[in-house]
Image 1 (spheres, helix red, strand yellow):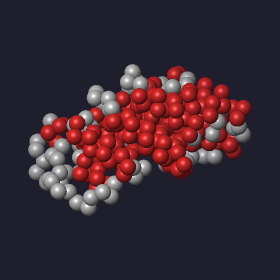
Image 2 (tube, rainbow, N blue to C red):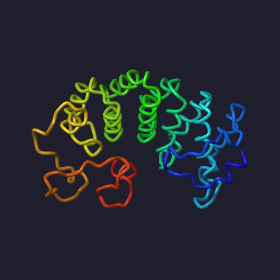
Image 3 (cartoon, helix red, strand yellow):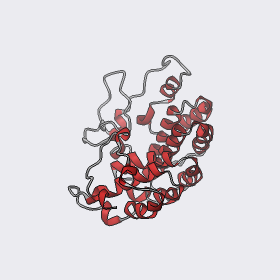
Image 4 (tube, helix red, strand yellow):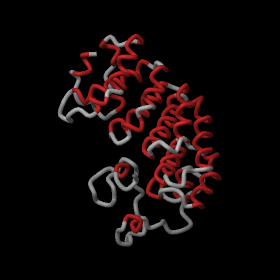
Length: 253
């Protein structure tokens, strides 16, 4: 395990992860790697230390090993690490690498309203990643996310927008009636994907808008938008409120 304390800061690009098997990691190391991922003293270590990066390298190694024993412990860290940008981005990727065996636990997590909104968003992203890694699971994942949006949590419009974004990624045209009902009910953050006309355009179900785009700035307490075509804001884009934070870490929360 010592090498993971020497690697230091990781790179953001998921395609540029080191091959951790080159360091000799194998199935016998799964429990020790999980111990690093779940070690609170490492996850809260000083930001300029190498120790704080050890859990990241451990969860990446677990993803590459593909051992299903890692599924439940990693999902169990969602609530603890959902405020960590690296974990928010990468733990869903790791679950995608771990594969369809994670679908059941992730579905249970998504529907459990005791979990934090961002943590449940990680579950949605992980389901999305599984479908992209394993196309045979795509229909099951679309059905799970769509079923959630049939009875969405009324207190988590950001999570609901997150789920819409995943359905767009998965080109889930078959979910359009559920999406129309969701937007009709008003229980979705319009900054995530725009309004229902934007969603229909993204899904290839219409060519152009038939109504003016909504002005989203008043929702942030900002002056009315003069530009008739305000930009949609992705979760990883700078927040339009001007805080300097990513939208997912600011007004989406």
